Length: 404
Image (cartoon, rainbow, N blue to C red; front, side):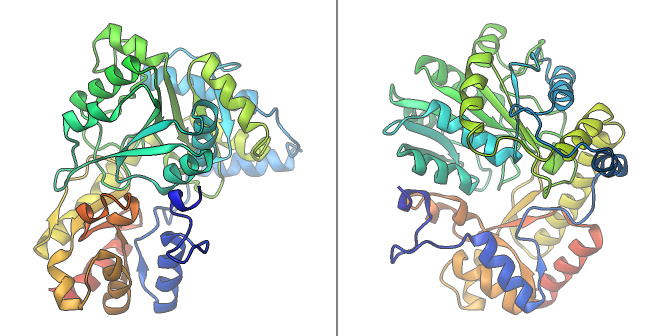
């Protein structure tokens, strides 16, 4: 099972992730690390102060396994305001140790060995690992460069009676794209037709540049889907999000899962035996941030949009093909014109070569893909544009000096 999740190398030994390998190499060479997607600034000051206050006031013991009541209520209120969803915080909200645990609990609760899980590719590497742990089959549908959209018929045909779940990441890591209405409709109709559960990874929900994010589970007339279809798919959708990206608190590991009572109940049963509960004072601090989102959340997407645009323009000045990002932290560009100059065969070799020759760390998009489709993304590199602007300017200048 581990081999199917990309956990083993060609010799059968357990391997480290490309994130760890790239970051270690970047540190050795003093490179600007635009490989991993974490910011270099803190979140709202009021949130960090709330964490300190909670610790000092004795909020340091276990919370209920489902999460602190205040945080569950804050998540439910946030979903009502942004997505028109009416959630019972006691039965339809589950607090987890980051989005990773929420995704793991969701998959373990609805997928059995031998089932199929449809996913839009490239994808966050955790997806394949957990599906592999279960003994299920990942069915990747490629988002095809340069616009990173799926073939509609290929997506439809991926669904069969064996499909237990479909994983949707929106806004998308690593491509920066957002789910279009036509693709959302195909996913909703095919999931319903095949009795599959939709699991949406929405950790970048507040980092969309071209308008407000709309969840597949959105209610209150906010969905792009036909009202009847929207209501039906909402009853089969588990939504994952976290404080990591919205509040620049990736190290806190505070996430949540929301959805229909029966689906959340299943995930809750699994989650209880994974970690019990996240850190109590940090749950209270995130609750404070969710209760007081303005102006932080409004400013977040605009600021990230400026940073992503800076990277897009710099890479285009190098003559590269760049996909226009609509959300998330990431920009992807085709670096294949530099393969010959740097003496590399593919983007897996290009990544360490860029670190050594330019002093900039980027990740190859093919590392986010299945072996079957990896070549489709060769040459494409992911830039984590979530650092401060002066860091991004330095990285782009290094690339220009070395490659222009």
